[in-house]
Length: 230
Image (cartoon, rainbow, N blue to C red):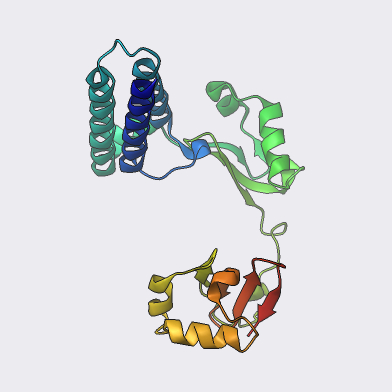
């Protein structure tokens, strides 16, 4: 039993490292080739887990080979548009100026019901409101609405807006994020003093705290889910 546990942990770590090396993508964003490699790696890892009679290297070596092949192919695809088109394919316009491209749907074997379902999911129940609908290489549908149907932007009304950057997380589950703190030229003492002004004596009681670009610190306590603003 101990041998099975050790082999399982080794394979788990190996697969985790391999997937990290291969890059960051959500399952829904995987290209077909990447999905195939991920499934093959999962199968290769499962075999030596279930059968202790199979040498551990018999599972690890094919996994490493697949990782190397995938990374190499990805690098080649980055340099060569032709290879990228062969491996990943090309995006397809399935709706143009409110007009459904019937021939393209047939070529892709993509039903009109699938198209309408995806449009509804994007809050466009009427195809006539769409300028372009593009089926991406990962199977997701990108929708570009007609100018008359898109939400009003401040630029449409000639309104100038203030800059809004990315809020920085300073505390996460009681732990200070020193990297983000130093990024805004602040230190632990400032954070402790700022929280103490609001009656929080120990940052370990803070579940979450972030600082926006206007200098406001929003925090939430662990115990009573309190919320404050400095």
